[in-house]
Length: 294
Image 1 (cartoon, rainbow, N blue to C red):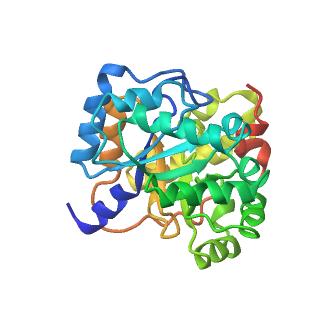
Image 2: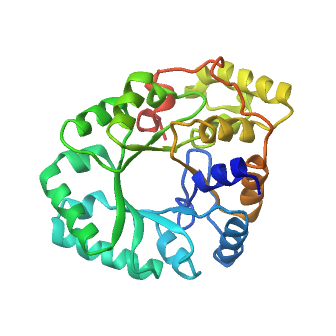
């Protein structure tokens, strides 16, 4: 395995949102519990060591815990409703997460939303400091939806990372000024929603009506992939993973074929893709799932 290939695969965090429940606008498939061991072994053998999960993802933590995940760098989250009930309740929930996962500690613990953190940032900072001192976490971060979230957080805190939407259509977090602030403060950027919950991999002709404005972008990405002799999956993934500003990339998987596709897309490449010239949009009605009609 080349150094480039190794670096790219080490950036990957296996997203497990659908391991215990349906997740994603176009996804209704849950992972088959019997396949979890095969998925994890295949990923680990390829040099993929990151996992992203949460107690809010149904039985995902429990499914993971049925396998030996000690070789992996695990990230989980704090459930917002649990956090709202106080630090002691959140601490107890985190202990349950560790027990479900079958690990003594995790690499990262993430607030599910900026608002969850900002509602009581002082309490949040004390809480994370306690967990770090007890050796239960190595890093902590916050999941954000907009650059405004990031700027609000940076006024009062310096998390180890922020997890944010980054994809071909949504490049708000790759803004030079925002990146300068993040990297200058030592805050890593974890990219999520790299396929925009599957929309960027869809047939543009069959998109739901509310995403009509996304059709020209998907057509452009399809052409770009064809010209480069790669799939749209690889195009979208490499856009995020080859960005030097991106520390980690969450990629949802729920079957072995997804992992094989991921391994193929992160094989050794002679050169990085130059995709900055492709069109994108800042329209939140298209790129922010909170504004979508279910």
